[in-house]
Length: 295
Image (cartoon, rainbow, N blue to C red):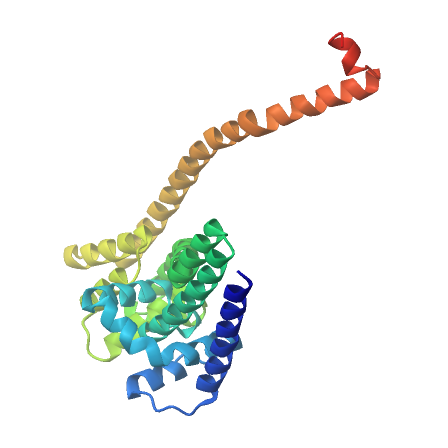
């Protein structure tokens, strides 16, 4: 066993030195991977940048193993997440390679020490951690957009009613906002500047976001355009519908939270309180437990 531990330690030290050497080496990378290292370099941490550089040489192999369909799915999820930390598909593959490798090495070390459960946890952590980051970013981004959209539509309706056209009003209001929704609108506006029709640009906006409110906004906007409805009334109606939907979702979440809270109280807090009260009575009465049971 001591020999195995020494071998694992030696392998870890060798891997660390090899990683440092590869990180410092001025290796030639394909053009798209070299660009991927530069994209978002100012939006990620120093540790994230080091992990990207360490794993970027393995990114093509990971992408080939994933296959075209899986790569397209990851690309869409990164769009929905807003490319957190400047993450591209290549940077995703690089981090997947590094985290999986580190998790595998740590899992083998735990297996040699007989800690099977910890080894499995480390292996799962290394394999899925990058996807967990993306899933969390998607959820945060969706919540942020859902909170911003109703107020944004109210302001947009006021600006349009003041006499500006919809395109100019959309750009003017987007400049005053910051966050995911403003970023999405700027992308949509740039697409329209490059010749994409308004309908196609907003369809792409809907595909980039798994938000019910964004889908409601795009659908109502396109229907109003087809039917010739006044844009101001359409925007106000959309905002009111979104607030009504938010209230319904809040009530639904509250109704689901009550049974969970009741279960926790009856399963843990109530027995714990009873035990605490019983122990308090026992020590306060100074009763000998042996006398109680006649022993």
